[in-house]
Amino acid sequence: MAEQHAGNQDDGWLDLRSDTVTRPGAAMRAAMHAADVGDDVYGDDPSVNRLQEYAADLFGYEDALFAPSGTQSNLLALLAHCGRGDEYLVGQEAHTYKYEGGGAAVLGSIQPQPIVNQPDGAIALGDIAAYIKPDDFHYARTRLLALENTIGGRVLGLDYTRQATALAHDKGLATHLDGARLCNAAVKLGVSPRAALAGFDSASICLSKGLGAPVGSILCGSRPLIKEAKRWRKMLGGGMRQAGMLAAAGLYALEHHIDRLADDHANAAYFAGELAKMKHITVSTPQTNIFFVDMPAFVCQGLSDVLQLTRIRVSMAPRLRIVTHMDASRDDIERAITVFGDFFG
Ligand SMILES: *Cc1c(COP(=O)(O)O)cnc(C)c1O
Picture (tube, helix red, strand yellow):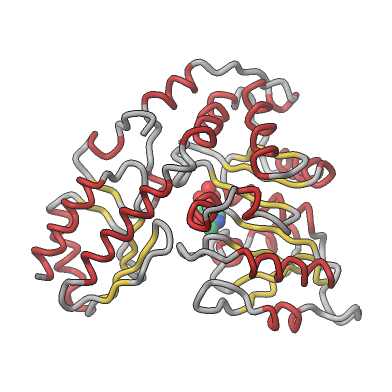
């Protein structure tokens, strides 16, 4: 690994609620410290420009835009692809539908058409075709298919994303990927991020999750789409000035932290495998760095108390969710396994 991480050792807590909790390590902080900066609203920040150029090339797009969050980056894409009275097809469980405050509807007058996600996280091709509305003034205009990869830690396969995006294009729709954890998907699939993005007209990638940057997401797309997104970013208050210090962290993350996501996947697989041997719990099999544990409701408070006492944080509601990341070492995972083992036996 490229560097030492301050991480969870700081305060003795092992935080497995999300990969958003990762903290910049010494080398990333050094890159931030050394960053050349300028006013990015004028397009004058060399570090932001470098990040955007690097990301566009890495992910296989004409252009890219640095945004303060994944929520804003997805919203910029929805606003750039769709207008008032348009709609986007989206999974019922998707972040862009369920966890972004209805932003597309509130701010863009864009109607979501949610569609059930299959157990593997995909939207069935038959459902995509069936939900595209005919050109008739009774209906909203179906403009965009938005998928998510990974979704709840599950990876959409290349055959599926190729077929789904081809179907959408064939029907005249644009395609967007919420790729908050696209790099986890690419590492799991054993392909380049660019290959995992084939077929998507735009993609949003979080720098602040498993990649370990403190802040920021990247929106990738065609030059005209990014130009439009930039207008919306300014309107939404996302035009940042000397953002190069943040962009430098993002660039460091893209340069150094993609391949190591395999370690997080291995830690999740190991942790889940050990938990699966314990009594009274059911454990999902992780494909990447996220998995779920189900247990009888009456033990939840007891487990929560024990985790508090032993300084381990997980998400408990609505379901126990564990997320591995670069600030959770194999030793940390061993410690958590011991705690769970003592509790469940
Ligand atoms: C975290 C996440 C986002 C949004 O990212 P924020 O930076 O928290 O706004 C979008 N989509 C998915 C799938 C995510 O996991």
